[in-house]
Length: 178
Figure (cartoon, rainbow, N blue to C red):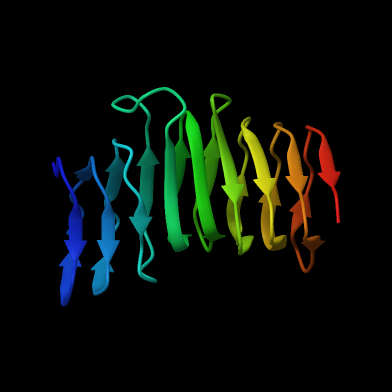
């Protein structure tokens, strides 16, 4: 349990199939190897993944003030059979990729992709949240897997593209305002 910041400057941090809880910032300038572990972000810190994928990620608001935001600098990649669960507040990411995992944003939370893309690129990957999804300067790209969210989705300056075996089947409102 890291009650402050976790910083990987050089070298490798191996998750070794153990749970890591981080209350502060996660900053990776080296290498993080998940080895199927769970990383729990239970504070209001930012996440700089440094290009290393996560397997299971849980972002909670329990220890945060109401409506607190978690910001992911650059890419947040959920790989393997992992999941990203976000409960409350705003999850803001430059680029979010589901390359083998699932994403659920509960009704109390929302997902904002600010400058990159929200990409679902694995047939096993599913976004099935009830929270609001907003993409301000980027695209929702689904080349495999599915988007079945029931919360509203808004795409500002960008596009929704569904190619290959991808499925876009939302049950909430979709707004594209290019």
